[in-house]
Image 1 (tube, rainbow, N blue to C red):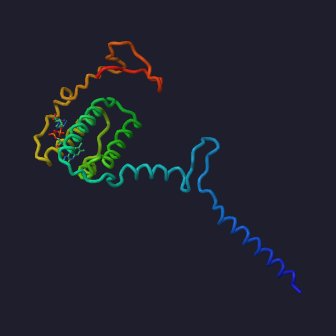
Image 2: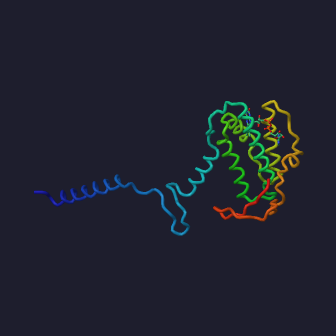
Image 3: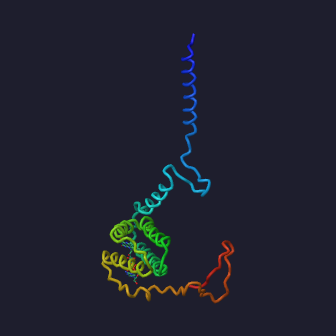
Length: 198
Ligand SMILES: Cc1cc2nc3c(=O)[nH]c(=O)nc-3n(C[C@H](O)[C@H](O)[C@H](O)COP(=O)(O)OP(=O)(O)OC[C@H]3O[C@@H](n4cnc5c(N)ncnc54)[C@H](O)[C@@H]3O)c2cc1C
């Protein structure tokens, strides 16, 4: 004859086993969407996403060694041109978001630059001389300085940073100006106005 206590004990035990098996088969979801903002929250809240972002920017070099000296030099020339032109087109008075974008760009660049050994050296430089982004002038002079440090390491002559503007005149013209001789056309796919020339 089973006592009432034993029956209750058995019922609770069966219920616990049932709940545990459901939890094992369907583990509780660790993320949810805020119904008001539609923001996706992770297990540790929104902050963890930000940390992930910073970690991605400042992580290890991803690319392998690029042994070929000719490829390395060609890639270097093209890249320096891109980077200098970018800082020389950066806003005079950037917003916090624009500054963050440029800083992130350089940190991600230092991980993804296709010459792994160059990227490693560049990461060391960024640690010592973090990107300066308070204005166009600051950003372009910072990059010029950093490029000169690379030049020095490779035994190349120092570049005169006062000559930045004349060296990197991209012919882009002032903002909103089109150098197009023909009237503007729209891209078939994106619908964005096509600017010709350059
Ligand atoms: C981030 C980075 C790291 C690199 N690391 C290495 C490395 O570790 N080992 C390696 O072998 N190569 C490295 N390179 C490639 C190297 O810097 C050169 O690009 C390559 O050797 C070709 O040199 P170059 O003499 O043609 O002139 P580059 O240094 O490529 O410069 C191109 C042009 O930019 C102008 N210039 C020169 N200095 C400056 C300056 N300070 N500011 C503005 N403009 C300037 C000059 O007109 C020059 O002709 C790296 C390139 C980059 C972008």
